[in-house]
Length: 62
Image (cartoon, rainbow, N blue to C red; front, side, top):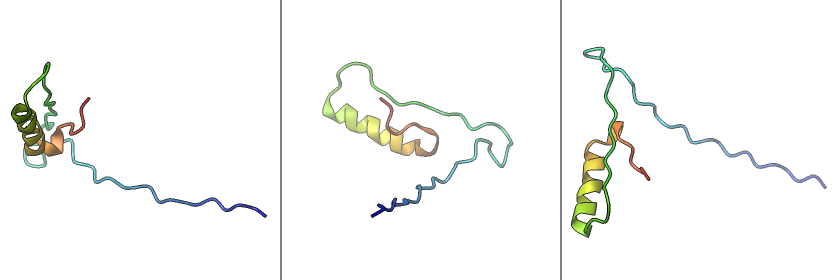
């Protein structure tokens, strides 16, 4: 018996434009990260800043 291969559709991500449609300039990219050990409240602030700047910021930066 031949085993059938299962085809899984790849997840299509919506690409954000790299150029601002109003001005025509490149949209700047940014990083939000902490240096050293930080308390929980600052870690939460870091996550909030990432969400605030989300379309052009790395969300899972390591």
